[in-house]
Length: 600
Image 1 (cartoon, one colour):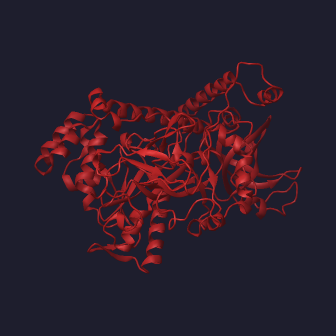
Image 2: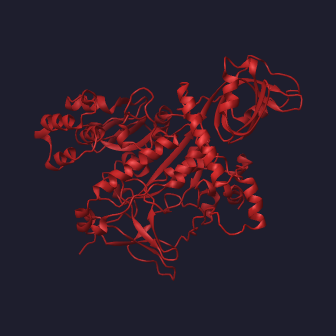
């Protein structure tokens, strides 16, 4: 109860940035029948028949030509009753406001004020870039949390400075600011608490002090380095010698942004992630928009609301909302649903762990992927040399790291860097070089690729992927197929993304997260456009039941405008990892109740 009420106390802010129906997990509640179920008992959410109760289930059309032998409708299990919350938003009424609304309007900026603030801050984004400063950083090396500093320097007397050789580095969101001539004070908050930034003009080089006052706003995520002092009023402060804007917030913080307190007492998370400081989150399975143009969702209908809903294809966007809300290390182990074909590697519902860490990049995720897989192997097999379906696999670290471009060139002899932006030449050379080894469906797929990045990826999937038997991180994917990944800091047209392959199968997908809200909007709009272009009128008439509408997640885009810290994230398939470590040939062997074809 305490954990859920802590979330509720900050619910106003999470609602305002689009975080709805999201909870932290209390492991004790699992034993009592509440909260999230452990993997071993959460065996199947989709069933072929309704439970024998008076509760009304959601019915879900599979709409999948590849699985026509499966029952055409599945029923979402309701014997573990989970409440459904109607999404809420503030809607300004034209009628006379109540007294409470008048009070709130005095605290909250109006729509016109909000847009004016956004316009000013967008100009600051351009000004920063004109000065050679990227307002959406890739990572930040933090030496201490604010709580750690408060504890370490608890005995530092008022008016005194700590040892000047002890430099610290902090990062967090700016919650308040004051400037007086050659002095400026900022309150910085991270997930553990707050600390004051004490900024003196003489301590900062060149024009940094003026830039600090002019360009840093409340809501921005800042990184700062310096030494410690306690002011005459007793406030422990970082005496700033350098700083960097890590994320430029475009929107003023909602008036209910109070954050969460007493972190240490609130969370008990699963032992495997606890030592790393991650907090487990529950995000909604039923979602109002079909996110992700490449993955086909299950569609259902909510009778009371009179609207279609979609079973989630990922937990990503809601977990990122939580990072905007102040959580710095979050993860979720949960079921994902994709209305696609069946194979030895694919089941319509499967289990993943998805995790996000602030102030890190995709290099950090590679180290974490190695750690998770090797620790699981040691726990299950007691060794790092394992066998999978007759293949000897070494999980000894470090694992191979190679770019997608180099791997494709190594196997096919084609250097996609030579094509520039000439899509037709890329297709022609690819089909001519690989023509005899390609099946007709592969030729058709390559010929219909909308960009060079898609051609590169298709060649990789056909030729390279099956050959990646030993653990391999495939790096730096094209931007066209990575709409949520940060642009590569040194290679134009690529992103800081990797996928982990073992025994010819993708096990994990990760990247440095895109935090620029304007870039994110452009990319998602392009993804939606590509999806809609594929749905020609002829196809819609032929496959009317198979079509669905992909829309922008405006709540997520709004959340990004409040500012998300530099971060990296990863999704890892738990079912496939269990297959690897138990030498199971099919995903059906590791799922207690897989979806199967109907036997006549």
